Structures are given as structure tokens and as C-alpha cells.
Image 1: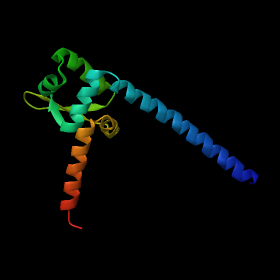
Image 2 (image 1 turned 30 degrees about the horizontal axis):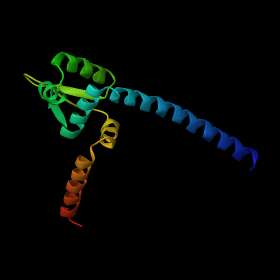
Image 3 (image 1 turned 180 degrees about the vertical axis):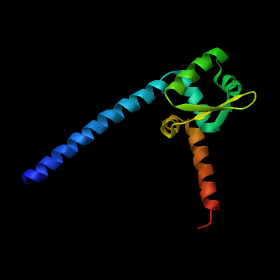
Image 4 (image 1 turned 180 degrees about the horizontal axis):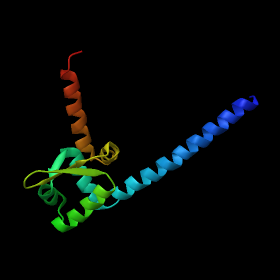
Length: 128
């Protein structure tokens, strides 16, 4: 290995180490958000249903509207969810696709197998 190759390899390793540290910090931030049960459930339902109103989320998560609002506020600040408003409701949805991928890692096996079956059926129905 010549001197130029060694310098390039060192800079590349230094750069990838910096990327790893930044990615680790971001992963830890997201995992911290998922570490609270009500937030996890909220994000789970948003990942499986797409968009839901606050009332719908209160009903499925099983916490008070004020507690849910507190969690949604934190999730909005951390840019994990976003919302739209119509005349009478706020509709929440995930804004970070990485969260959906993480949520599905913890999906119960029976739901994962059902999702795989549906995906297989969809794929089989597509033209070759």
C-alpha cells in the first residue's frame, strides 16, 4: 500500500466512523421515542392504518385524550408524525418511514404472516 492509498483509506475510515456516530445518535433518538408504550402503540397504529384522527387513536391506544395529545406533541416536535386539519378533526400520520420499518420488527408473528400472505397475493396478481 502506498502513502496515497493509506491516506485515502484513513480518511474513508474516519468519514465512515463519523457517519456511524451520527446514525447511532439518530437511531437512539428514535428508539427512545418507541420506548414508551403509549407512543409505541400510537406509532404502531399509524403505521398500520396510515392516517387516524385523535379520537380513533384514543380508542385504540386506550389512554386519555390529554395524555395522547402530550405524546403526539412530542412526536410532532421530533418530526416523527405530522398532521392535517379538516373542519373538525386532526388527522395524524407517520412522517418518518424508518419508524414504520422499526415498528414492523415488533409486529406479532400472526400479523406478520398475514401481511406476507397479502403481499404474496398482490405480487401474484401483478402481470409478469
